[in-house]
Length: 502
Image (tube, rainbow, N blue to C red; front, side):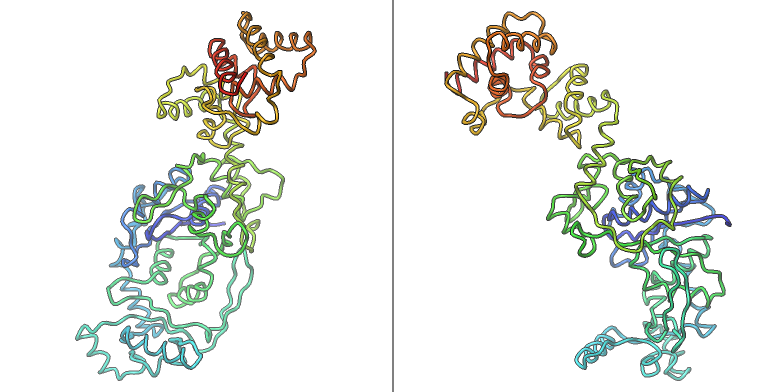
């Protein structure tokens, strides 16, 4: 294989969708697997849709994911500039070259004229297509006398350059993922290649840039598959060798019906962007929701690609080693928000307790609690198997930091019996006289007392948990009381008895 060079080429029109991140990831993994080069190119030819901050967002998102750009706006490289608006002087010469070869032409049709033609076609139940069947009747350099259209050019009349698609020719091309495809040019329109504002369209700019940047493989989303025939024709018109193409399947809604969108995330409560988007209509991101970048990347990699094994947890290095385009599926991949949480849980439980404790300490400080890190290590070990995010540790441990203000009425109704207050007073007396307040020490003392008295273990411990925690939740009771200490334990028994009733 010749030198592999791939590019991720997003448009800065808003936050980067996770489908776009997956495209970047697959390009990056393919480059790493083959010893190739991963390039970031910003395609901002559509200035009307440009959104301030989007370019910076794209670069920050890739950095957070650990997708390392080797050539790009910040990194530089021998094939720059890597922002299309900085390359606009390049494109006109290629558009003119196509006109000279007879593969493109000038079109002077106004927006109003084209809108009228579309409207009339719709009224007749048809779809207007600007192609070999209509162009000879329209306002362009193919239908007008040369003197007329040359004067229009010399008068700087607004015009575009359109590709001249053959009347009826089968275009044969191959996609790595989808195999051989044949499209007849009679079904295609004459796409605009160069706009009246002096900027190229995506179609021309991306072909020229891919050629000049020596791109060997174009790995992009399925939504670009309809454009592939035109792109193949452009390569042919220029006399260039086309790169190999691979069009990735869509990311689908959780129900599998349609493309995953921001609306789905808003409705179901999960992000569809890697980072928080702070502009205009804000959107939450995976980073700010507490996902680890490694978990996010691992989850995305398996949405469309199958390693062929049962393995689900991969480091970035393992993904690169295992990745291959021939194991990317054709059909869309259904996004599962619960599976995304599962991935984060897997990474969380593998992290050193000290690291999790440091993260949780920052959360506690923001809530006014200042706890020794060693004590937090103990706490994290008690609950980390129960949570998917560090922020969730609070929901599992809030009662470690404050006594309950209310008590679960359902538990009271079910567990609080006439003899319960007297039993808890006995338990309080026992714990008050217990010197060894370690989990093992209190457990041994309490179990011996229960056995000696002939009490029901479940009845005692459920009532005990109620006054300490306020509900039927939390880890092992003796771990809880050891952490909060004897004084707090006795105080909570007193408070619970007072609140629930003796």
